[in-house]
Image (tube, rainbow, N blue to C red):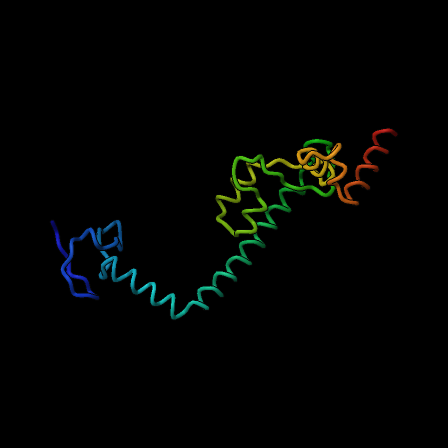
Length: 161
C-alpha cells in the first residue's frame, strides 16, 4: 500500500486517505481528508456570516434568472385546457419537483430544465378549477378566487357568443 505524509498533521497515511487534486496528473491534496474536513469546519465556523451572505446573493441571482426564463417560456404558450393566453402558470405533472419549488430553492439549471419539461401550461382559472375539483369542491368553484371567477365568466361569455 502506497503511503503519503499529511502536510498538516504530519502523519504517514495511505494515499486513499487523500483527495485528488488533479485527475489528469494523479496529484493528491497535501492535507489528508480528516485534516481537510477539520479545516473546513473551523473556517466555516469562523466565517459563517460570509458564507450565508454569499449564498443569499447567489440565490437571488439564480431566482431572477429562473423567473426570467420561466416568463420567456410562458410568453409563447397557451393554456393546454382552454387555449387562453393570460394568467398562465406552469403546473407540475407530479413526477418530480415543480418549477415553483426549483425557483424557491434556487436549485441547479439542470433541475430547472427538468421541472420545465415535466410541466404543462394552464391558465389560472383552469388550474383553479382543477385544483378545486381535486379538493372535493363542487366543480372547483369553492376554491376559485375572485379573479378566477371573473375570468371564468368572461370565458363563458366568449364561448356563448
